[in-house]
Image (spheres, rainbow, N blue to C red):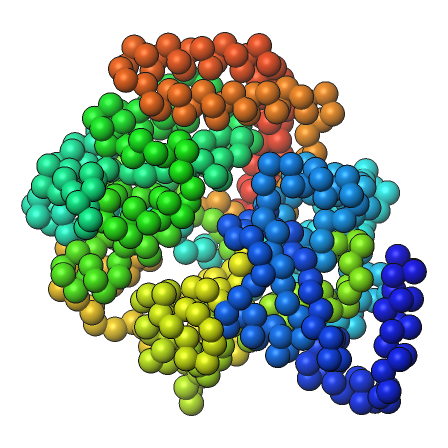
Length: 572
């Protein structure tokens, strides 16, 4: 490390500029103020893109820091290879703070933000405004190293400015509202009613915009971790349980439901999707297609239902559809109690770090610090200030005419940059502040454009007004606040490192859960489904499922204790 930092400092001495000039330039353009365009590798477990950052964000980063970002997404063997080489990249974005992150800490592959006072000198905004997130990360280091170190290796994404509220609703239960209206707004109480609704929608809309067959749902396996992602997510959206290892955790009682629990939430939801499959309502490509391939089908009107807005309304509700009276939007079953996460000043589990072997730790720190400022956070979400958004004289946030078009359609061509708005979106999967955190540069507004004063207006289309009128709601927040939901309090809880003796069983169990679940979902009859599920249960038991379950139950108990403390503290 000393050799690397000496090399960087020696190079700076070759610049024929004064110290004062250099410092002034740093303040204006970042640490790299010379003519050399520096390339930084960003290894991100949350990215869905591979290659150089392009478009408007590439221009912003080049102008401010004279850098370009090379995005390296996670994939089979990518992390293992990079860890073996001892180089994770310049900036590292973790999907969670579990075993992989702990291995990197123990292997010395992450840069300590307190070294040479790098946080103080180049991350001052983070240091001043994210103290709880910093403290949480140092506590996590202490936990991982058994108290031997409290080094600071980053912070968890989605930091809040207060713990007093909950985040925006994440599980939206988007359906084709125009078809729901056409069917006469049938009452949907439970999952059985949802299946019937999907059958009726197929009956009146058998083909998509291009004449292809329509389906109730289209899924993708890319994001499967310990379980099939879409199955566990729908369980969270219906029962209000949070995904937790190889099962689901009830934050109201602290009870832990293992994935293989008979009649438990995971297997019940797996049966829901199998029922849809047996009725030819699940896209048969779900087990093999990519996220982008799924999204194209949603955009083409081939899907009636999505548990998430990004694979539902955000993808489908383009002018080409809404102007014709077509729209996807929220319609949850009456019995559903979707989970929503409490605001947390300590941040979440997706940690943003700097690689230990970077040649440019100061520059990496400056970039991350900028992304944590109101300007950086806004630019990363909505584009360049003054081009796509700005503040009015009263400090209220608004979209420019170009910004309005970009917000409605990400494929809108940018005026001052190459490509579309979507082409320039930051591909590293970095989120610093929670979208529902307060933006201190505004007039009391948050980073969430849905709640800006300028965007709370009359419905733009008749179908949107129909949704508002029927649900007596102006927006998603009002809609979900009227019904039942479960709030998970924000705490400092982090799942402990998987015990060494469980690592092999864990890998075998989780692989079988994923593979077995997809097979069961595609069962052609109830009898075949039961047979495949029972076979999956037997295999996971043989691999050591009960040992994994027992450990997770202990973790759930610790989590519940912290959440109870947080709830009691908030109630005082």
